[in-house]
Length: 600
Image (tube, rainbow, N blue to C red; front, side, top):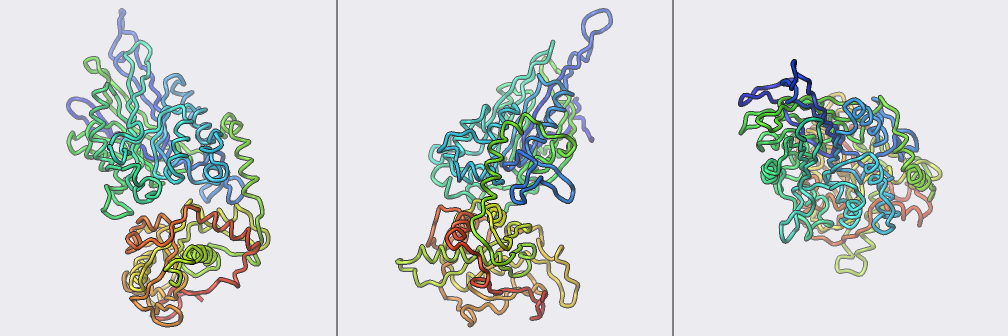
């Protein structure tokens, strides 16, 4: 660990908490001085902050999509039950009576478990305890910050989840649309008693990223606004210090890169480094949202010259961040003098049986539900290669989306518009198997709770859109080896920000520069007319500006359905009883180099 001395005191970096859960354990270090009284150690204490990030509905170490215990190439384990095992160990080591546990968001979306209690048996209608609330309450959380995915299911369900928690849900940059007043608790100050010492007051500030205003526009527009992370921290950190906070920990659901997936229309999405650099008085930021691992990183605050510690544990409860702070009493006040952090691995402990037992019935109920067969498929359709070749499984999604938009346009002035559809390869592991198809199979194909939109675009705009999407591929010269592992995700573009389109035919020449790759773009067998009007089926994330694709966020909206696309896929299979690729699969796009196909 690196440290620096500032203003006569030793101080190290604070920690950024995003999409994480963090616990702070404080222990005294006082000893008697010779001849009575106390020595310098009376004036020191230790603080341990534990943090998780982006739990996304994982409680058990279980993959609902594969119907098996979770596993990956690194043999990671996931879930709150495993995290609880790590937390119990740290509490036993530091002292269970002096701990604070917090979470920083992306908690109630991401698994079939959380989808079930949002859509199939929504807790805001049934009154049943949300399994994430039950588990977190049992684990003794003291505060939680909002993540952007908390808003996916709408405000009624989020408010119900908030009401079920035994601790406050923090969102300092979530404000009322009209008044600007705080819509959620901005921060909380927890008092931890240290034997024989003045209590230590730990301030926890919760922040989320402003992208919610775009990504969940339908759920928050007219209700909530999302000011900048740095802006709101500048407002509240001094207030927390004035209220007596000895230690300030920021739970900031925002990555460290300083970039935004939605362009420059909103404050920065990944602002945690800026937060540490620009806002004085922060002792720790636990980072999330980016699903990365940062064991320990130090950033210097530009105004004070003091160090701030950033740490980010891996998502889904795979890791636990453990931050240790040393405090010294200066003129009767506690002052942080050093900091360090490390990550603990969830695969090193057994699951906490208390948590597993608590949610066992809900867990099994979801397993039974997702393994219900709802139809059959005439052949196996895999998404393994979907990101670089046209596949039947992606055409299945586009078939359902286009059909739903066409049906919604019936009887309207736009009923005669040709319908195109766009879809992204969300899950490379998705497979629709030959034979019986379950809800689990369909949910694994479309893993996000997106809803359906239809917008109007011209042929010229379609061309621009596809050119932007094609930046996903690494430029590869004719004749050069092609490795699928490195061909995609150019410049860090994630799979969910690569769209493929049905209803038109086109080639993507990966030997050409970005912006010049779409060739032979045709509609109905003829070159596309730049002025031709089309209805384009898409999802709410893309229509609201997610991914910063051209034209689509400003395109006239023709269809806006609140039904999730995933549910439309399920309903299609229930109605049709069979998925038969021969009825919809058309290889309408391919990768080329100088006109030659890249793949046979």
